Image 1 (cartoon, rainbow, N blue to C red):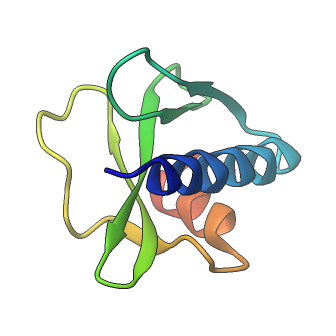
Image 2: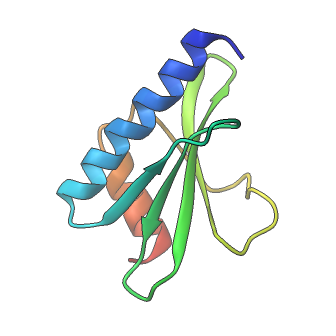
Length: 95
């Protein structure tokens, strides 16, 4: 992973975090010393959903899963450049 890809991943997650914040969702951007940054979204029932940005082919996508899921679900994703990415994620996780 190049430094540019790390910056792009962080940039997408920070933008999504702000959009979710504007929708009234509590979020935290976790940037570990090693590993990839993750956006944590706290739902009203106390459940935490982890959102990450990954590069697929020639575009970035957001993918999410509940904290208890062992594997990332491949069917839960949205293109990072989508204008309504935050709204799609909120609708999918049933805030």
